Length: 76
Image (cartoon, rainbow, N blue to C red; front, top):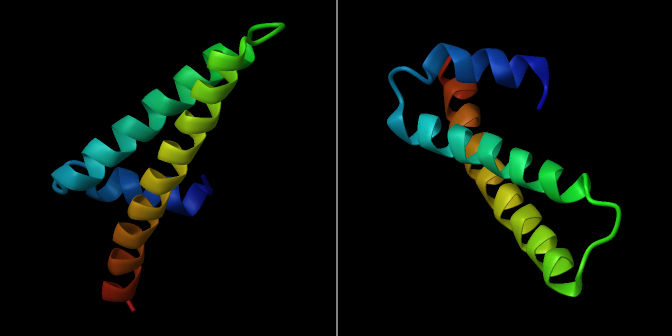
């Protein structure tokens, strides 16, 4: 994530419970993907899990971006 996005998240995470939930899920997914990436070889099931985690992470990122856009638009 870009620094300006992280700053905006930090600013609103305490008052926006949806943003907080999405961001925490995003961080959790990053950790889970990183754990899978640490393995030297992956089983087909692990490959599929990694692919699915990345899809879920991307969908969550899109939702976070939508929320951040609202905040950016408010400040203009």
